[in-house]
Image (cartoon, rainbow, N blue to C red; front, side, top):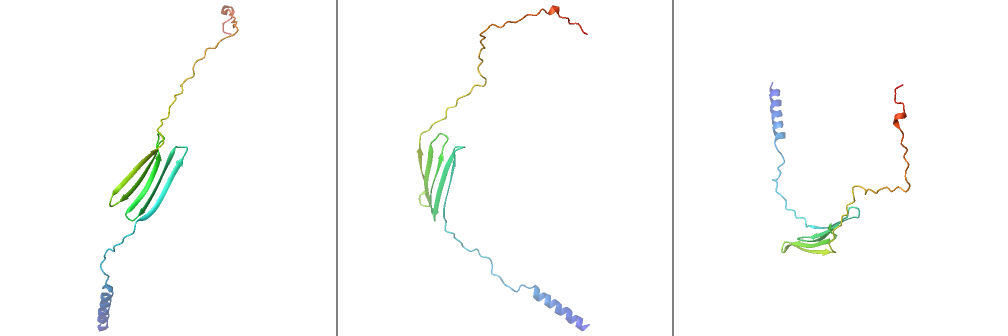
Length: 139
């Protein structure tokens, strides 16, 4: 009986020791991280089927962003925008237009064809049959 009591006490102590946290971790503190902003990208579209023509290019080095984009407008003018942005002067853009505006002329096609009279060159002989001579009785 005494050995059973010793075994029970030992088991309780063993459970108590293994359940207590043995490792003390430091509290979470956010780490300051600064990624220097630097990139360069560009793209362009030149679709002759749809008439979609445009392009863009932009670079950033730290606080200064420079770029341009252009688009062929529906009236035929190529609009190009060059810009620079920084914390000291803000966003500054210069717009250039190239070409002259033109608007397409739409020609509506007739829905029906014009009626052309038929001219007969020779007289047509029409034979008249006397319908009274025919037998219209049922057989």
